[in-house]
Structure formats: C-alpha cells, structure tokens
Length: 217
Image 1 (spheres, rainbow, N blue to C red):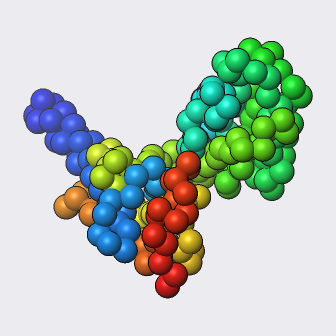
Image 2: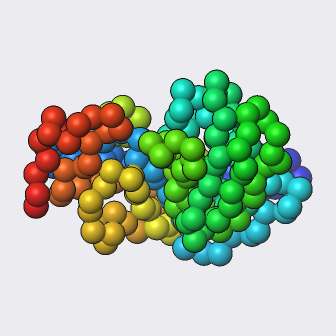
C-alpha cells in the first residue's frame, strides 16, 4: 500500500509539473521568416522575485566598431559586462528610460558590470563613433529568446498557465497591438503562434534603403 501511494504521489507531481511546448513563427508581408526578432513569454500571474545573489550575468562586446551582439536579450535583474575587444577606444552610453548610463572612454574590461533592473528597450551608442548602435532588450520574464534565420523560436519547458506573448525588433514599423497575443498553456497540446507583420521591416544594418524595396502600407 505504501509503495502504491508513493507511485501515485510521483504521478501527480509529474502531471502537475508537465512542461508545455510553445512555438512562434514571425513572417513578413511576403510570407518570409523574419530573423532576430525578440520573443517574450510573460506569465500573467505574478512571479517570485529573483534573489540578488542569483542575478545572472551577460555580455555586450565591442568589436570592429560594432556592438556584439547587435541585440542582447536579458531578464530584468541581469548584470551586463561591456568589454571593449576592439582596436580602438569607445565610450558607451544610453539615454533610454529603462537604463541611463555612461562608460567613459576605454579599451579592455576596465568598467564594472552594469545592472539592468527595469524592463524595456535600452538603445546603446558610442560618443566617439556615431554609426555604432546596439540594443539591450530587458524582459520582465524568464522565458524569452530570438527567432532563427527562418523566423522561428520555440520553448519546450513552459509551466502551465496563462501568458502574454509579445515580439519586438528595431526593424519593425508595426502598430504595437499587432505584436501581442495571449495564450493558456495547459500541456494538452503544443501552442503554435504565427505573427504576420503587415509593414515591410526596415533594412538590415548596412543594407541601403533603395535595395530593400520598402512598401508603405
């Protein structure tokens, strides 16, 4: 009897803790997948705050007069290091409401990490090189990522619950209301979401506007 109760308890734990699968596809007006789109899956119920000692670290590098990666996605409460592995000095700054800061002119890794504790988009620049532009997307959820070259992103370990799913890209010219969905992940079936944006994205970095064949909708 004790063994039977043990198996029953294990079965209940496995059932209640079952992971849910979510896949997201982002398409442009022509039906092509859009790469490097930020996807955030935010639980509608309040989540427990992360302890200060558990705050993760991330890195935004500088190479060839570019921020690497161009877009960094992190959870709110993450420390970010800004090493300069370029051959020239940079002075990194942001005036974004989510995080205002400035790292005086430097090379190497001379500055301490910066804490990003407010959700939002942080636009990065360099006071020396005006063409340098980067983004840190600070998500208010532990479930996030970016679409691949085919415009796809997936997460197989989503706990059961109700979520707001949103997408973002600096290339979008889309109304905000078209970039959000709500789902109820129950584990009964995999959730599949397709976002089809209605306005052609802005050109990729380094691509001239005339070659992108913009359409105004």
